[in-house]
Image (cartoon, rainbow, N blue to C red; front, side):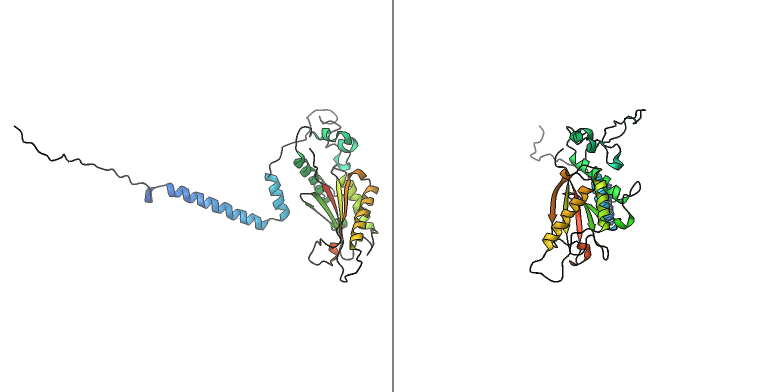
Amino acid sequence: MSAQTNVAPVIIKRKKVIVGGGHHGGAWKVAYADFVTAMMAFFMLMWLLNATTEKQRKGLADYFAPTIPINRVSGGGDGAFGGTNMFSEMDLPQDGTGAVNRYPDNARQSQGSVGVDDTGALDHEQFQVIDDALQGRGGESMISDEARKHIVTRVTDEGLIIEVFALDGVPLFDEGTDRPTQMFRDITQMISRISGLVTNDLAINGHIRAHPVVLANSPVWELSTARADRTRTLLQAAGTNATRLQRISGHADRKPAVKNRMANRNNRIEVILLRNTTP
């Protein structure tokens, strides 16, 4: 008869430890590479912000902005118009005789915008046409070098602003009046011709400089408004359709362009090509 025992059997559990990471692991290298890449991108962004102008940064932002890609190119035919319809929007753009200007009732059809809400893309394209014509990009400028010194352009939420300003010794109007100088007459003729390349409505703002003496009956409001209205008559006389002019405003000396409120640079007229509000 075998002996009985109450001793429980001994169970030995062997745990296998696998050493991962440390000097021989690779996970930390991936994390470090991601960190270095992010830092490089950050410093490149800082360098670009410091090395570019506001206009260049705006161009970069517009390049990456989502838009509807529309390319108005020739159909490739071998006819007289190379496959392009003679009534298309982009024919004869130099003198503004595309279908929009000749046949305004069919403007949307000639632009190919029926059923497509691409107002923003069209505005950007049209503003670029105007700016290129003023600056002489891609061809001869429509204005003289002397006149170009008095003009700056900028794009805002309202539209493309063409700002015409006076310089020391070269005014836009006779002092204290709304009588335009010959130089300003020439500039308004050029603006009328260039704005004819597109069909956007127009608005005009008048600004004048402040004066050192505060008058009891200051004429700043009346004078800035009168100069804006005189600009309207000059544009219409140069061929601008009166129905395109939507607003005439006088801002007196309340919105100076430079810190010195009495500087001649504050004597200026803004012609605004308004953004289209309907597709």
